[in-house]
Image (tube, rainbow over all chains, first blue to last red; front, side, top):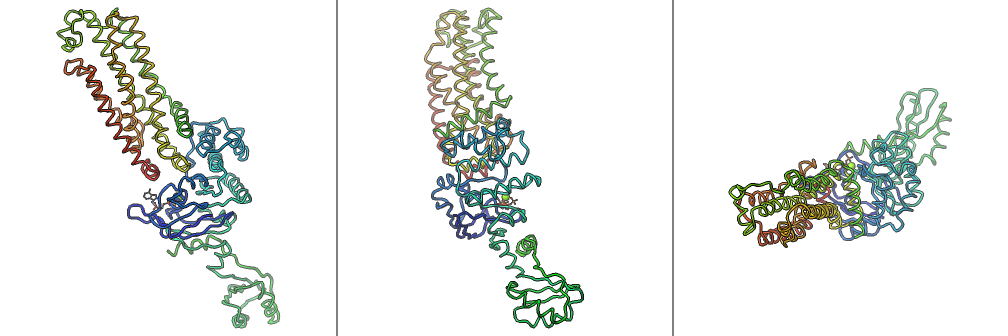
Length: 302
Length: 261
Ligand SMILES: Nc1ncnc2c1ncn2[C@@H]1O[C@H](COP(=O)(O)OP(=O)(O)OP(=O)(O)O)[C@@H](O)[C@H]1O
Ligand SMILES: [Mg+2]
């Protein structure tokens, strides 16, 4: 649905996006993670035909950026970083204007549909300027969906929202995902990325890594299993380390921390070995690194 | 055309909600109608001039040719007040365009707008027409009211002067051409500043030549006759064509998005 090859953007001398190569499948929710100034918004602007790439190629919804820009604009929806609503105009009027610009055939019906869907129908006559931040965000999302785009770009949809409003927006994104839309989601919120996205790209000028959330964990840390013992694990370390499927062993307090590739397969054997060696196992679990650790690892090592 | 119309209607519903804009668009035409009417009514004569009139105003000589003194005074003032209406085609669109462009920048609504399948030409046409239409309408309507009022207030001989092709040319040709010029310049300036008042004031400088013309005539430096108006029309037309061409060439999405900040 979205495909880029060496997509780059320079702003008079400074590189904002450096040779980005990506492929995003139809129906996928793709997280685009990166620190401030990483070039996320710049990437979204190139993919929505708002600014021209300096180099490289991109294809969105089957259309080439730079060649079929009007077609791209017709087939993608965008939630820009700033809501950019007409604050003096009513919510309804804001959407009507966009429905017309997006060539929606049945303007009033479609506007009503999305106002109701996002819970703004009762407030449709009120000026958008009187809305709370969360309501403005919902109105902007409605605006991005009026023409039923196949691909949706969301640039930090929950930035600056309180937890409740953020949850509403997130639930709505989850709903859109069920409808099979392709979503490109820029975010700083790792928890959000983890919960919503099929795959995540960590990006800072360059693409640092792309994988599923669990794939990213494995990529950086491998899989780690913790055994909580009733007593000191020291006596078992050397025996465990000699097992060929164990990559690494560490003893911390009364915990034994192992790195191995396929714990589902080897854990039963490990448990047997430990028990027969006399260990008193209290708990066994997998150590899950937060996405934050992974992100900081990736972004910090540029 | 459908999208251009959408933009025009959007601009109107936004910009006229701004009291300052509404006031300046409505106020100037009213002032220009009220001024001659009130002076005439107050003095019983449009130009309450005396016998010294011709010495004070050298231009009156050329203007009046062989009219009698009282009529000449009337013609002189009709000329002066009439040309004031040429300020409207510039002042009104500049205010509207300045607020509509700068407003778009402060609400940051350009980016979602440019993401829609509207062409930049449609967008610029919409913005320009949103300023041009009210300006031309206000100029024509107020000038019409002025003409009707003068029919009742000045002598018939003097009134004939207002029906001269010179006025038709000035109001119906030069007026719209000046409006287009003012709008193009206002859009260019507004896209580079962040305060609508600054954009308005800079763009208003286009009024200066008009005011100079009116003043120049009243002190006898030049005579605004048919040839002169025709010449002005031609010059403004050429500048218009050049500016619109350059404008459309220069405005592409990326420049609008990154420069209109
Ligand atoms: N129009 C422009 N002209 C010059 N430089 C620009 C322009 N737009 C963006 N940049 C630069 O490109 C870099 C990337 O900016 P961008 O807005 O894409 O980052 P971002 O990842 O969206 O950041 P944030 O998380 O703060 O939104 C920044 O260094 C920015 O200063
Ligand atoms: Mg950004």
